[in-house]
Length: 75
Image 1 (tube, rainbow, N blue to C red):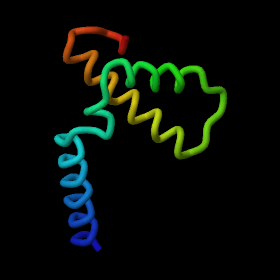
Image 2: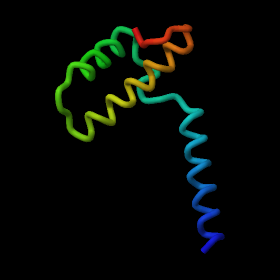
Image 3: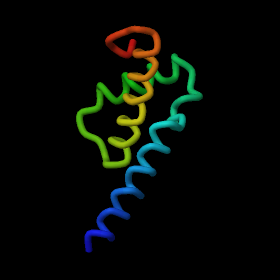
Image 4: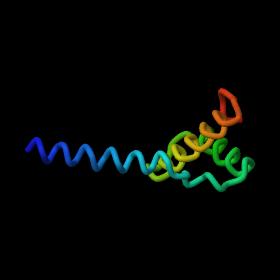
């Protein structure tokens, strides 16, 4: 049982590391497109689970760009 848990931990860790090092789905979008998507997400009152995942991806890319430029907020 312990060996199975260790294997699972290693697999999850490796998958997380690979995802963190890869470009996100919005990495190739222009700043204007990303800003529009971010604005749409912020103005949404309720969203489906798929839309929530999309907005998380938009926020993640936005945060990466802000950090890269030395900003505290996305735009």
